[in-house]
Length: 114
Length: 112
Image 1: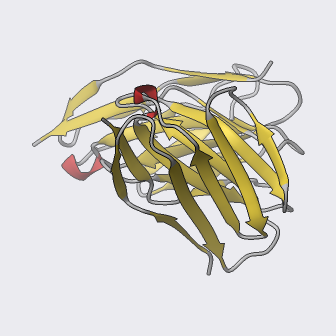
Image 2: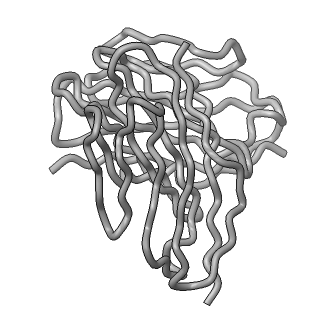
């Protein structure tokens, strides 16, 4: 069966510090991968998605970046965090083929920028 | 473009009450439709789905029917429990597309 991991689970970082959040998927190959941010009490904002190694599509211009160094690894980074980067970050994957296209989400990382 | 509109919350119900959360969509073609649920502090989980008109998705007592004529996918449950308290997201994905479009979410509180 497929599983998706995210770490760390929680993170408190000062403004201006760097960020690296990691997501890995097991039990599937060539998944589509996604990073979302959820502000407190709000909906989902799609940040990046990837359909293959090294292929990254950005949805929102901001100080975040994403990379996909391996087929089942997706990394979210920032060189300098802003207060507005605080939120709940969710990684998700979906199958590359098939008709249903549902997404499967990780447990999330709660980031607080102080 | 593609979009999903769902009723604003929060929705507060007593245990064993009937639940309806409205969802309408705008999309070209024939998208797949989904309901996801998010419990406090967790990621989203797929609750149910429907891939074509008149399909009924169902799971854990929840159900929703894909209505193309009204472009709707309303979520219903006959008798809610305290454990159903969560945020519910309606979503669509266009066939062949890479992105899922989510509604804003509806928070449900169920009181004992």
